[in-house]
Length: 474
Ligand SMILES: Cc1cc2nc3c(=O)[nH]c(=O)nc-3n(C[C@H](O)[C@H](O)[C@H](O)COP(=O)(O)OP(=O)(O)OC[C@H]3O[C@@H](n4cnc5c(N)ncnc54)[C@H](O)[C@@H]3O)c2cc1C
Image 1 (cartoon, rainbow, N blue to C red):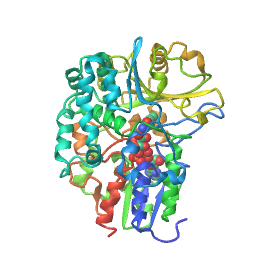
Image 2 (spheres, rainbow, N blue to C red):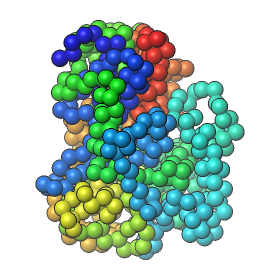
Image 3 (cartoon, rainbow, N blue to C red):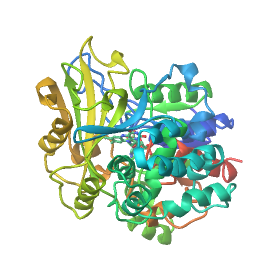
Image 4 (spheres, protein in one colour):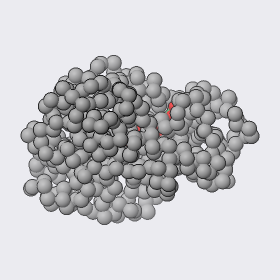
């Protein structure tokens, strides 16, 4: 039980809720976090989903946004045991019979891309050189006064284009186009939509500038380190405590919600203005995901060189195939050959499974709320690039959108980004405002439904807490 009224309350102990609480506690204010689940972490936890001794990442597995996050970089998470593991290459993308590989170095990546070497260097070289100034600009509200307008323009102008238009225009070869399209498909949007090129540019920039690492021992370690940091600063966490109404919370000067707009309306709707309520009611959710985790008897038998060196492997073939898969999802249908985001943890972190055994993680995009079992279609895509994969499966965990939402209610209809990230909802997230975190006096939204959106980075929570510190917590 919390003994005295805290300065601030945070609802939800996902990466953003914890970031909000740490920011407030570091400023010397008292804070209590209420979390519905038995353990903190939201989308960054670990669990034995398949067999004893196999530790899986139920949600996030690979963390470029954590390394890029100015907030995470301001913490000494290593002191609390967090260790990042980088596979030799951040990303591989098999095409039939061969594979494109994104190396940490722009020059090395370019050197293997043949006629696209110069175009890859020209696309990513200037962004990586400007990373120190550019990345903080990208990890906050889109509407702001830029501190690095030149770097932002260099990123923003091509980023406004569709991923397919940019990918086909900038690169000639299948390898570079496919690499770019796979990264852009993290947007969970049709790749013909405006601004989807920005996702390809951001994920490429992060790969070259920071890497796409995993946490040794599993994603839970990130949260364990955040929780330890919060406790160092006197913050408290109450788990197994689902908040259904703001009226049930201790009186506090500020309440920050690591939930999505739909939940905020239910929990605190009567404290919000009618105009803001209307805007939240119009907030849109995006496609869901269908997720598999596997316990394997051996390493994934890739048919080309390259994927064995990368923790993340994009399985979907050419730019046109990936675009077709994402267009199907955007149209509310299920692709026959889905674009699969695949991660192999154990070649780089053997602690996740018994000796000689392996774990793998994969998901594809599906229409929001889909109930179709995509297991066979996902495994066919893996088999296509790694024949014999199915023979290695000892056990699998299968979770569709409803299971993900039951696990963490922020994943509405299986949407893992807290709302669709099309241009309108990227710019106005969750609604048009210069301070998109402030929902009303003393009430803040701090989840992935605020800028900069989905991913484990804590920046939504950090920005929301800073707003509360400027207003009610001065
Ligand atoms: C399958 C999958 C794969 C992913 N892969 C990656 C990846 O590889 N890399 C990456 O960076 N990101 C990945 N993500 C996305 C990432 O997990 C999320 O974007 C991130 O966790 C968002 O953080 P958050 O704090 O906003 O919300 P969440 O992490 O969702 O946390 C919200 C928390 O609030 C709690 N909560 C909600 N409502 C209430 C309530 N009423 N009362 C109390 N508590 C409540 C929830 O239980 C939860 O703990 C993935 C997500 C999924 C599902």
